[in-house]
Length: 278
Image 1: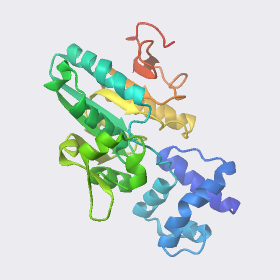
Image 2: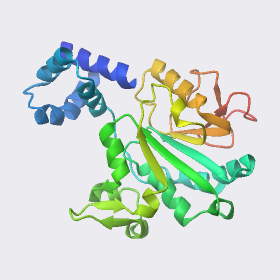
Image 3: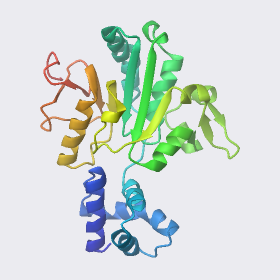
Image 4: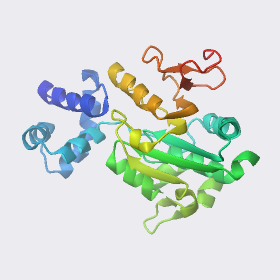
């Protein structure tokens, strides 16, 4: 890949989504953009970049930036996290709020597997305190295609079998005419989906009692991670918890949040944790 082509695409990724792509990963950039380039009739990525620079088409720029993101995810990723949320975190938050209502945000939720995993657990395994609670789940992602796919709840066989037991696949999904698997209406009705860029304010989404932001930060620049911390902190209801993915941290990025000892990868409003995470 030509250096000038790489620089334009890397700059687009950084400005649009906060992704910091090093030159050593130019091969990955080429692999992710080649299908889009072919679809649009470009012979090379240089032709695609020329179009980006000459036409200034915001929709196309967003599509290119989306293609550069990592979209890999699966159902019940790190199952122990979901068990902790269902058995401990949500009941504790429900008891603390005394409202009978909770709001959950899956930030950077990709094609919906994380949100649907939580919805299935709420349907199948709610504790006594959660059975009568109203729990709203919102999943957002930068990518328009991922958001539309999540809303439709349709997954191919490979996607459906990643993390799902046969029991849940048969109970909560049905086969489409094309042979794919679609989440049934009962589960889909528990989740709403919106397109949102974590680099931008989320004030229109409201406040949340629990925020998932797992496996989103790792590819971002330090400045972008600082921005995400600021955006998420602004949407926390009193006592809210943010859950990050393994290996992710806000340490050294913000004074707004601090880790908790009793919730693995959990972050709360600064000054509210009993002691730092172990």
